[in-house]
Image (cartoon, rainbow, N blue to C red; front, side):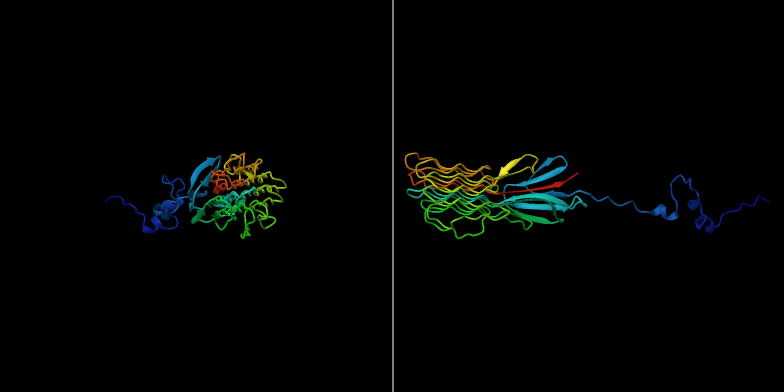
Length: 317
């Protein structure tokens, strides 16, 4: 008769004292029978924000999206705190300088509104980004045109105020920075909006007042000389310091026109025998255009305001 072999019963294999539960040195590393059939662990979520839109550059651990024209900022993955916020700069279009008027200098355009901050919370969605255009310079005897507002995520500073011509009235009361005045133009003080820009310069004589900038107010004309525009403000959001939103210089009858403020603003012109051409603001600066001098054939317009810009920055690694 052969030797009796004892075989383990089912409970001994799969029970509470089974081989797979009790053998800590199991070569497969299983601690329980359920581990044999466990699904692979899930994918770890990206802790940083991922987005597209505009022109994308990097500076250290940050991505910078620069919008020179209207587009969408598309957030496909929202980072976990504290990586779910952005820094932004929104600058609206600058105002156009006034057109030439006989015997007087004319006001320079005001800068577009300038708003910047850090720590803005966002979500994973598509944001519309609008880059406002600069206002065109005015024709003979006409004021310039106001700049157009830029916007991102309900942040929408006002456009720059138009430079004014002799005896005209600016009915737009909400400007980023106020446009410069001319003789007998109203309001007496072309107002900017607090937190966005400064006032434009008035004219007490035949020279044109300078447009207000984001940093300083435009200068008031007390003589026939055109006055300088207010200075803009510098931002280092891209990793390099760049100045935006300067006010346009005021024009003169036959003396020097005022210089545009820092930030790419236009210079004021001069008419009569000097015939110095008024200049427009640099695009994507939100600066104001220069005011024209007295009417001279060949120089029929004020300077155009510069278009605005929107920049968004966030940590990506």
